[in-house]
Length: 496
Image 1 (tube, rainbow, N blue to C red):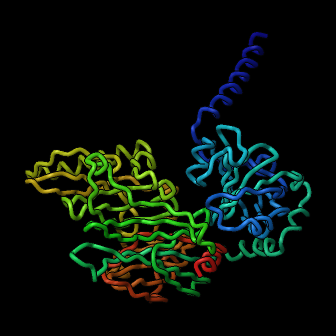
Image 2: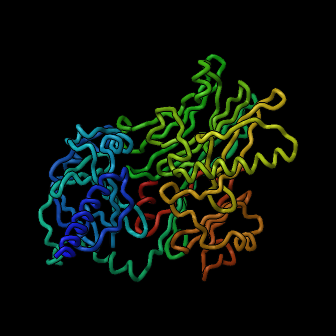
C-alpha cells in the first residue's frame, strides 16, 4: 500500500514540475510537433476578420478579398488559399506579447485585441524555406500576418485526419506539386547576391560605396534568368525590403544615412527605418561629427556596418543592428544573438590577438567591447570579427581579431559549402569566395573580376562555368540569400 501511494505522489510531482517548467522558459526551445492531432494547430480554419497596420502593403479592398479563405493545418500540408507548404514542420515559442509584436510588426497587443501578456507563436516551414508564423490566441482563434495585414482565423473543424477528402478540395496544383516534389527533389534554385564596390569617382578623398543586387535563378541545372537592381534587395517575412545608403552634406559636414524600407506598390505606405544614429561616444560628448557608413553584412533580420568618423579623428567602429529596431540607435551585443558562448568567444579571440601584439612589444591598453563586432566573408563562409579602438603615439588605431564561433542558422541560413573550399580553390585557383545551393545543384564562385556559375555534378564543379557575370573593381559580397523549389520562382516574379 505504501509503495502504491509513493508512486501516485511521484506521478503528481512530475505533472506539477512539468507545468511549472513550461511557464519558466522565456522562449521555449524549438519543438518539432508530433503528427496528426498533436500538432500545435490542426484542422480547417477560415479567415473571418482582419486588422490593417502601419506596415500593410495592401489596401482594405485587397485585404477584404481574403475573407472567407480556407486555411488548412495538416501533418502533410499547411495551406492559405492557393499558398501552401508541403510536409510542414512546426516550431513553438512562448514569447512576451508586447516585445514580439513591437519588434516584428511595429504594433501592440491591444491593437489586435490580445489581452494576455504572453503568447504562443507557431512557425511553419518545409525542408526548403520558412512559410509563415501564426499567433495562437486560443484553441479556436489564431492570427496570421500577410503582407503587413493581420488576419483572424477561426476553427471550423478538426476532422481532416478522418476525412482525407478535405485535402482533395484544395487547389489542384497542391496535389500535383506534392507528387512532383518526391520525384524532382527540389531542382530549382535561386540566389540573391548583394554586392558592394568602392566608388572610384569619390570627391575630397571621402570613401563612398555603390551597392547592387543580382538575382540568379536556375532550373534543372540550367540558368533561366539573371536580373539586377541598384541597392540591396532583401527577402524578409513581410516581403522584399530595400537597403540604401544616402549621403547628405550640411554645414560642411558629410553624413551617411542608411535606409531600410519595405517595397510595395503604394509608396505612401512604405515602412522605413533610419540608421543615421550617432555612436555612444559622440552622444556623450555632445558633438555631432561627420560620419560615413559602409555595410559589411545584411540578412533577414540583422545588418552589420562600419561607422567611420572620417573628418574627426578617424575612428572606425563596428556596429551590429536588428533591421527592425535600428531606430533606437543602440547597437546590440554579441551575447544578444549568440548568448554567453558568443561573449566568451569574443574575449578569447581578443586575448589571443593581444598576446601576439605583446610579443611584438606593442603596448595596447584596451579591453574588448561586446558591441564591437561584425560579420565578414572568408574562404566561402561568414565569420565573426571583433574590433578594438585605441590610441597609440597620439593617433587613433584599431585592430580586428577573429571570434571563433559560427553564426547560428537563425542569423544566416544555408551558409555551408557542399564542396570543400580547398576543392573549389583547386578547380578555380583565382577564387576569392564561393556559395553552393542547399539543393547541391549550383555553385557560385567569385574571382576578382567575375561571378562564375557552375553546375554541381557528382559532388564536383562542372568542367566549365555555365555563366559569367562581370564584377566591378574590388566588388565584394555583403549579402547572399538562397531560395529553393517553388520559392525561387516566387522571388523571380517579385524581383521583377
